[in-house]
Length: 283
Image 1 (tube, helix red, strand yellow):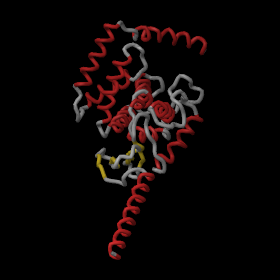
Image 2 (cartoon, rainbow, N blue to C red):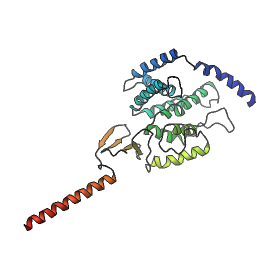
Image 3 (cartoon, one colour):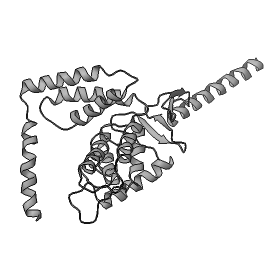
Image 4 (cartoon, one colour):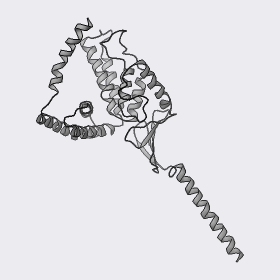
């Protein structure tokens, strides 16, 4: 049966694939439309503007060689605007749970409404949240690692995996520095166990984590907030509360080696001054 189904699925997929090949002029017009749409988004965002940013991250974040540089510029602009909303992770979590709440009790698998929900889960967790490198998104994905509510029946190769496995893929692609698995690792029980081992101390605040291209390490607190510690020796500590507010508090100057040099220099200066005072009294 599977041998018959696979060719049918392949040919059903051909028309969308062909349709995704655009002429240069068509691509220029598409990117110009995206630029206008993204530029019109102003914080605080309404639901429609959040949807625009969400769609931009999903569509512009997919690898495509045609006008890759222009796509990348627009993608980063949408990414920055999404990150500016302190509730961006909650927006995606709420969207999934609202769709789940609309499912009729005892809904049949592979029915229209069930398929729509399955598509939405995959679209949000694996294909959109994976494009948003923020502590808020990492916390949401970490929580999804224990979410097995949508696990398909055994030996059901047509269904999507649970949110836990979708979160695996998202964490692998989000751009974590020193991630335990590469972006191509995929979804399987061993990889899920690996990510849970990584998430445990991160969630407890016993370890920091960071993203490629960022100069800060993040650490979670028990109350759900986090702090971002600068790695470049800057004289500040950035703390983010659960509400997303940012405060800059003074901290120790420089790294440990620099502080020892300052201490030794100060001690030498004090010793020289005391010696000079002693000589002065004798004379």
